[in-house]
Image (cartoon, rainbow, N blue to C red; front, side):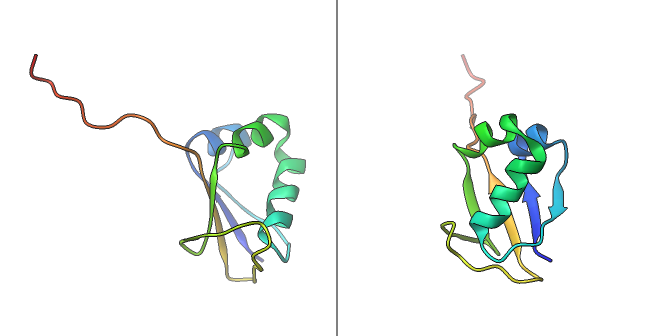
Length: 84
């Protein structure tokens, strides 16, 4: 069964960092995740990038039992110069 990995705001919205979801495409994995985790997760998902085994993909990508679908929200921040 494919593994769904959630990071940052997606993890927080779902209340978990990973799940196993029985599906055959990335879109199906995400649809099932939205049904499980609700509207808050669905909202976060709209700004996320989705990766399959380390490669950015669209929803039509096929998933297999050993695949990993990662949901990565945008991150903010960066280096700040402490010299003022």
